[in-house]
Length: 104
Image 1 (tube, helix red, strand yellow):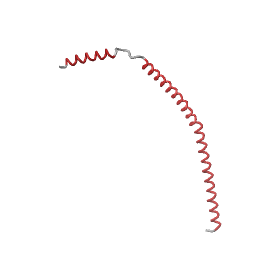
Image 2 (cartoon, one colour):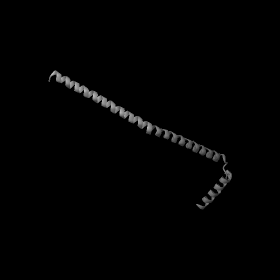
Image 3 (spheres, one colour):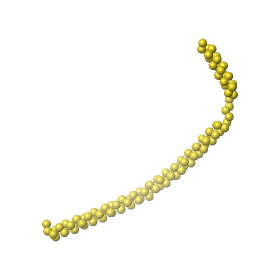
Image 4 (cartoon, one colour):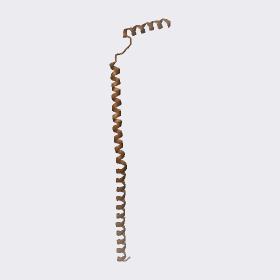
């Protein structure tokens, strides 16, 4: 190969490399713009909606927890209604005595 032919091949390779770099840069810019549009049109609104929904769920959970706490407080503050402990022990003793007699 002659020196002139080598220079022509070298120039063609360099030109192709520059064209490939320009093409890759253009493709990269197109992908970047597409990604920016995707994020701004879809991802940001979706995250915003998720934040609003999370806030609503948090408020509902706090309201439910407060309601449960109020119910527990009222349940424990009401004195136990029913027979006195001595009467309960006496009835249990009588029933136990009768069952014991019947089991013999």
